[in-house]
Image (cartoon, rainbow, N blue to C red; front, side, top):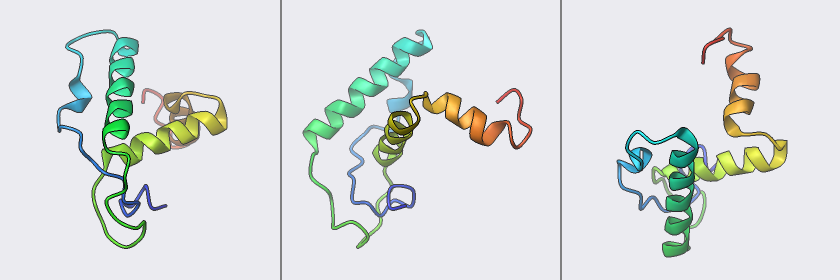
Length: 95
């Protein structure tokens, strides 16, 4: 819950353009570059910014951590889980 509502203390040292790390490359190459960027961020900023639950700080890194948790728990990609659990039940066939 704290990762979702940005109260986990996880730092957000990513540049705003992190999402576009690869210029028109394949999605797998882009995902690899994003993953590498996130791991680098975690290695450079391993400390929390505050005690979890005591403050608020927007963090893209928190969402990435949640993505990895979902993938590890389900054994599926985040995209597959989102499509199966969110998009299809809502009738978004082309999501």
